[in-house]
Image (cartoon, rainbow, N blue to C red; front, side):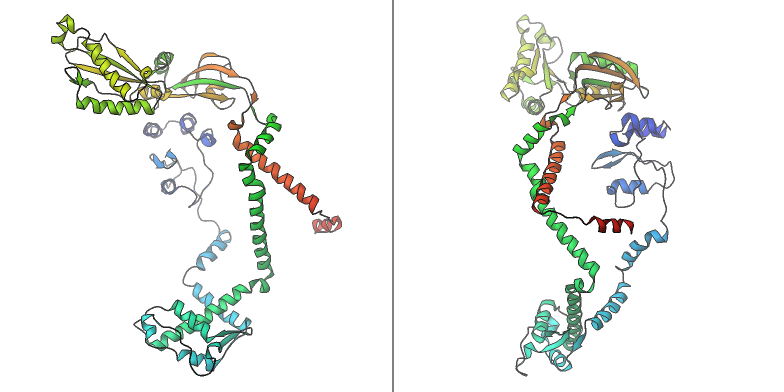
Length: 502
């Protein structure tokens, strides 16, 4: 990514670089162009970098997100929209700030009148007299007054005739009181009473919204029915399509003609910065295995004492064994050496091979497949008692790593099955087994086609997502057909025509 950024800074063609190196197939051919976006739409690190660009044409250094690395170029900015476009969102924001308290007070006055709140002054006075010092510590408990009789059921006020009693107020205090040492108990009791009235009004208004507002009632019913429909769809369609493996398999078999591969080519594609790199890479490609820079191993120098491995060497070999077991594409080549004193004695000629084999045996004991280890027994004449270790891999990315040490974009490799239109280089050559050279976007490209598969049916595991989606649509149609039979629908076409004309 740093190399691409350097090339961008050198004013190389942006669209060409995006086409060559972008891994976002949806935007690569469009020069990486994204749709318009505002705040809150992108990953924060991406958004912060993008909005920091002030002038069209400005470019960020490489930016990392959970999806990878990005270089962002500003094409155009839009300023704030017109007031008419923003009016709704502005109203919502105002409703959340301090000015909303004025609206709330006006609203409470209105519903107080609409819902016919009537206070009973004597009972209110009785309630306020229950204040004592325990309110200051937040430990007040309701105790029903002995006088008058049945005082707990006495209504403090009514809302459209519905009474709100002293005992209800007492319970409200117990649940909502907070310790306050800076006010009198009478003042706190008054505040709690006002809050109780306000809460009761708001709750009554909320509980009767459907009676007062037809549009709200319709909206509630719409949500209610929507949730029911969602649950039914989940039961009858979505979950069933996932869990009914037999039904899914039968649906797939009955509709195999819908799930077909086009002609596909199994190919290896090397894209190099210049023909020289491509030629060198092609030579290595023929060998089928590539020297690994990632797993480059230091020599096991002075690793032997009476032909036994030292502790330092075994620790290194333990790491090597773990790598070989974790990655089956890896193999190791071992070469043993003897020092100059040992070389003068012919009886020591086999020491080099013995040392290499000692390493091999250790790796095998650690669980490494013997087939992954090759011993070169003729390596003698070095001025040290050692074994060299070279790691090779059949993974094509290892080949790319070799060439990309100094220039990260020197070589790109890919190997898989391609359909028409998936790779520009492949689309330029004849679809037949063989090796082809071409040029794409100024890069030298080698295309090696191993075989070409004709159009044919996909297996279920190759297209399961698409089959599940189609099976869900099928189940939904069958369910609706069943419902139509169970609940026949009669349409008054004349009324429908009237609606259309209106």
